[in-house]
Image (tube, rainbow, N blue to C red; front, top):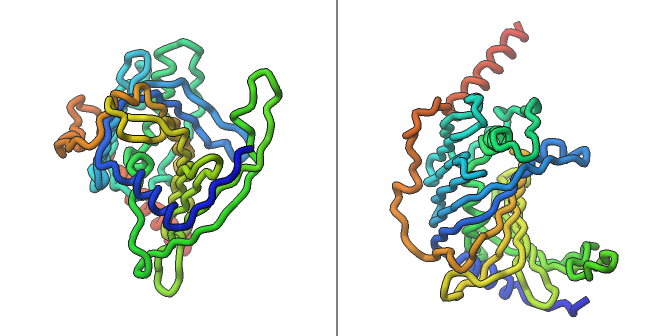
Length: 319
């Protein structure tokens, strides 16, 4: 194993902010969606891969388009205030075609339904589209914003504090020869934890993992809510050169896991050299319109109705 690199906290903060220096990004990618509903019992279901195009722009705008077998499966946007998801294809049933709207940051996990009566056959484009449509209806576009456009660190000493530590994990050695049995290495990481003031306490806001083998590389970002519950777990792959000028060194592969929504999505850039970085995109791109006249579902309204119904049921039970 290569010698571990040493770095002070300032170096870790510097590398985080280097990654956070991207103002906007547009590119095409391959996407694999994985349903982790049964991950707690050692099971998960990986769906067929699809193609996609993404545009992200600071502070929190995103456009995401996904298609499979040249079928437009879904489009979604978020402008930081409202997200919109259009599920456009479901294999012909029409059951999952809808236009969802909601508020970024809201927790809609109580509304999530697990659909288990779909069994797509291999190579059946209609069944694949149907299952992917149901899966993508649970995705929220703003989940990808912080994964692709990392937020910079904050000045220390006020509301935020940063703490450095190290950790070692036994992991499969990805550098092992294909002809030999895969080996294990004791992988060394630095952890940089972002702590935020909450009253008289400090709560964790983000945790950054830095690979120390051969260089200092941001390998993982974990994002937590105000209660310290994990919201996003983002793993960054090896770095590559982006744009035609190759002036940007960024991860070629990004894995995003959302425990509450019970899904994992892996994005792999198709052509890093064709990615556009730094262009300012008009705001209308991030405001998806229901030009397909899909049935509309207001998730905020639906969640409010569900909570009101539960409250009324509880009150009747107490009488």
